[in-house]
Each structure stands twice: as C-alpha cells, then as structure tokens.
Amino acid sequence: MYNTLKRLFLNKILLFVLLFMLLPQARAADAPADPHEWTQAGSGLVAHGCGGILDLTVTNSYEALVANYRLGHRVFEVDLRLTSDNYLVAVHDWYGYYGPVKLERFKNSKVAGVYTTMSLDDIYQFMEAHKDAYIITDTKSYEDTEDILLLQFNALCDGADGYSPELLDRVIPQIYNQRMYELITGIHPFKSVIYTLYASKDSNAQVAEFVQDKADIKVIAMAASRCSEGFCDSLNDLGKLIYLHTLNDLAEINRFKRQGVHGFYTNFVIPVQLSGKVVATPTSSAILLNSRRASLAAYNIDGSNYFKLRDLANALSGTEKQFEIDWNASNTTISLTSGNPYTAVGGEMAGIGAGSKTPAPISPKICLDGKAITFVAYNIDGNNYFKLRDIGEALDFGVTWDGAKNTIAINTGAGYSAQ
Image (cartoon, rainbow, N blue to C red):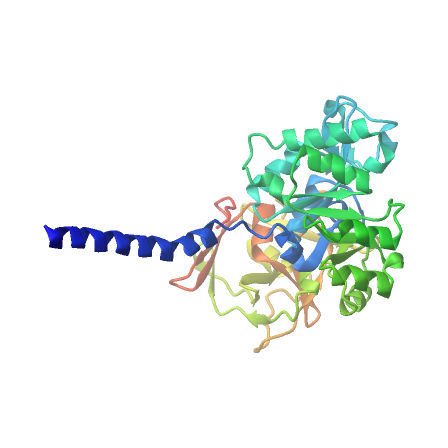
C-alpha cells in the first residue's frame, strides 16, 4: 500500500514538473505577434495612394493596388472618404465629382476615365486574399467635424465584420492631432497607429511628449523639410520610427536612410530598389511550350524566371494566346494586343551569355488591349526581361513548374493558375 501511494505521489510530482516545463513554451506560442511588424515589410516603403501607375499618382484604384503589390509593395496608404450615403471609399478628394456622391455612382465611375474605383469592402477583400498586405488610412479627418470622424472610423471597423478577425490588425490609422487619437482608440484598440504631422499644430517638443509613453504609436510621419537632426534624433531615442512623405528619388531616400530615417511614402520607388543587391542567373531549367522543347533564353531572379517580351511573343505567335507588340515612342509605352500575330523586328530568340548579372529594376509603361498593366521587370545588358508569371496571368496562359524534372512548362491551351 505504501509503495502504491509513493508511486502515485511521485507521478503527481513528475506531472507537475512536466507541466511547469511546458508552461513557458505555451506562453511563448501564445505570445502576440509584433503589432508593428508592418514596418519591416516592403523594405520600409509605403505605396502612396496605392502607388503610382503609369505616370499617374494617388489614383487609389484597384489596378494600382494590384500592380504595386505585384511590384513588391506590402504597405499601402489609402485615401478614405465618406460617400453621401455614408460608405467609405478610396478617393483623394471629391473635386472631380463636385462634392460627395452616393456609393453606386462612385462605383460606376472610373479614375482618370480608365481605372477601377474601390469601396472599403473591395479593399478588405484584397486584404483577405493577401494576408501580408497592410493599409494605412488617410481619412483627411482634420478637415471634418468629430461627428464625421466617428462615422468614418465606425464604418472602418464595422466594415471588417465577416472577415478574418485579424484583418483590423493590418489596418494602421494615421492621426492628425492628439484629440483624434482619443477618439479612434475609443472605437477600436488599433494595434499600431501613425502620428502624421502634415496637418498637426503641435511643436516638435509637444509631439515628442505626446508619443513617448504610447506603445501603439511607433511611427511618426512627416515631410522631409520637418526632419531636422535634433527632432528626429529625439524621436529615435524614444524608440520611434521616422517615415517621410512623399519621396520618389532613390538617391534622396538612401541619403535619409543613412541619417536614421526608417521608412518612406512613395509613388514610384519599389522595394527591390532598397533591398540590396539582386542577382540574375541564366535559367538552367528546360522550357516546354505546349509540351515541346523551346529555345527561350531566361534569367532566374530571386526564384522567378524572366523572359524577353519579344521572345515570348515570337514563340506564342500562331497559338491561342498570341499577342502583338507595338512601341509608342510619343508616350514611351509598350502596347500589347492579344489575339494578334506577332510581327518580328529582328533580334528575337538571341541567346544570353554565361554567368550571373546584376539586373536593374525598371518600371516600363505597358498597356494590354488599351488598359494599363504592370509587370515586374529588369534591364540586363541593355535588354528588358519580364516576369513569366505576370505575363501568363495577363494573357491567361498556363505556367507550371516541375521541380523533379527541373522544367518550366508554358501551355497556351490552359488558363493561368497561380501555383
């Protein structure tokens, strides 16, 4: 009997010890993610107004959002305003509409006559499908009454109902003054908040005093002209990150980075330009076009394959997914026309030299059937190379990868499917 009780006692002690040993691991597993992890995404860049598309800025359009996500952006500043029937939509201002309009009219309109407008629901659908995407709000609330501000942020939060519970964790509000902070945090405990200073009346000392004990305000955004050495150093000493708006010159961005600035709002600079050296290696994979070996030269860059556009057009000519290429010198635009046979200009299917290269990222203007599109592209030795999957998605042909056989397959009889 004694031995039995002793065994039970020892087993209980052993169980307690095991549970105690596991407890820190459970706590670590349950620890919340960094609420400011968005500051590490996209090389510290914020796509201003969803990012530029062709030569247009702050379109806040669906095409700009998709194009700049494809170019590596993960953090998007979006201008949000209420329609006349109190729906939040992505629009910088109402000037072109002569005042707020109803949601239906807004959704039926086009930005610059071409691009698709977005409601808050459209943005949330994109975020639901792209779990690594964040939005920064620019609600222009400093122009409105507190009642309008409350309507905006209640709509922002209510609109997330029915989506993943974490979606609002990827919504980063910009506040314009101290009172706005009180109002929005009373509506929802946002994980991360930006104090943007372009409309603030606070002095530098007042800004520092206000943010110093607020863990949710990690980022202070300002114009480059306000980023004096003493002010920015004082904010960095508080553990805050400085973001500047809106910069499009890479040399200027790199200069501010060396001065301790962390992030930048931009229209046209893309993350790969800040992420360090990129290497292009001649693709060693076999390339099949409709199950037959194709002599297409390509480079592998960061795990993706890049081809010359005219090589692909030449190879696909005569298939279901053929396309023509025209160069419009007057507006420096590459025009693609689906369904038309390709007209060779010479130099197609030329080989590439051996050895790795240092590619230069480029942002060419491209239109497909009259509509602007974006391909991730690089210039290598004077030739432009485009991401195969981007082309396949735009022209709707199949692209598959067989790792076991080290083979890239292009299938014009199938539609595009992300792998």
